[in-house]
Amino acid sequence: MAESVFLHQVRAAGLEAHIEVDSAGTGDWHIGDRPHDGTLEILRVNGIPEGSRARQIRVCDLSDFDYLVVMDNSNLANVQKMGASRARISRLLDWVPESDVKEVPDPYFTGDFAETYDLVQRGSAALLKQVRAQHLL
Image (cartoon, rainbow, N blue to C red; front, side, top):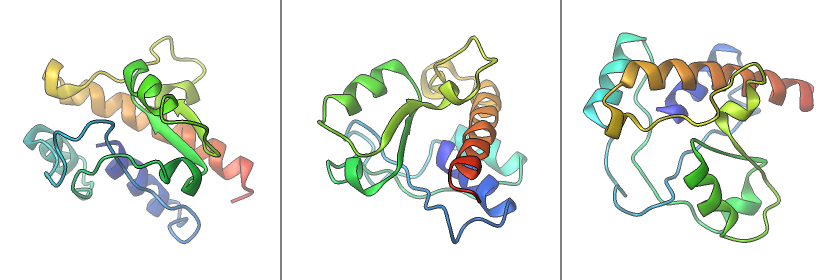
């Protein structure tokens, strides 16, 4: 969901030539799968195209990307355990300073795809604002 939402915002800002967006999970249990049906529905309702199929994060991602953005503390710990990173590693909601919530709940477990979408939307907008400022875009 986060990849699709962020990419949609990047495209709406006309920045797709400047910002590469990718997504990867920390586990291998969904490699090659499409997003969950609940994710596809919330994206469709909001006019956002479906993202890519799932893949697992690779060690090279730590050096290939400027930002590695995760959804929760568990993901954060898993990525940090992979080793030194050139990328800035953060939780998505760390970019929303006024938010007391810092972890995006997994709607696969909560069933609340709308709540997750709202948090991802807010976090993505804040992240894009910072990326634009940092890189003068």
